[in-house]
Image (cartoon, rainbow, N blue to C red; front, side, top):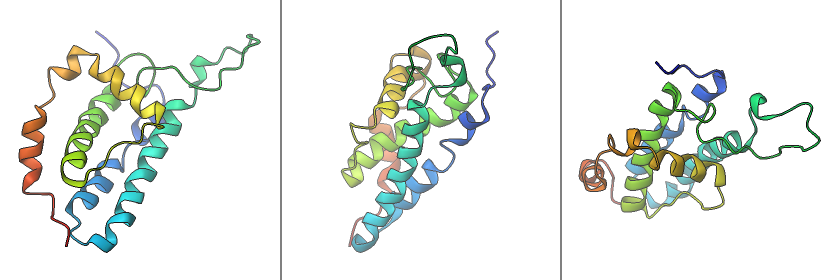
Length: 149
């Protein structure tokens, strides 16, 4: 059986606030407060992006002359899915779909670590075969997302 526990504690912690920030953002009805909620969500995405782009200790070869400055790993804790990914990836997928539909928010393209992470997840049957359809997410959030006033 694969080992599902992440090796690094940070892999569990890095995305812990992202869904709470998204929930506050999507439920906010006040146009004047929207940018603050969006900034809070973007800060969490930035934390995740920095983590995904920072090489893990196992990616750094102390004997190599080449300095690895940007991680190439597929998932939070390396190149294999762990429980941390099983917790965070469905939330990121929901945020990607619902925030686009109801707030015209897209994860910035320059967040290369986040996009590498998502694209690697979308390349896994284990992930894509267990994701709800985009329409199902949109339907679910139709009653949650507040119209701006």
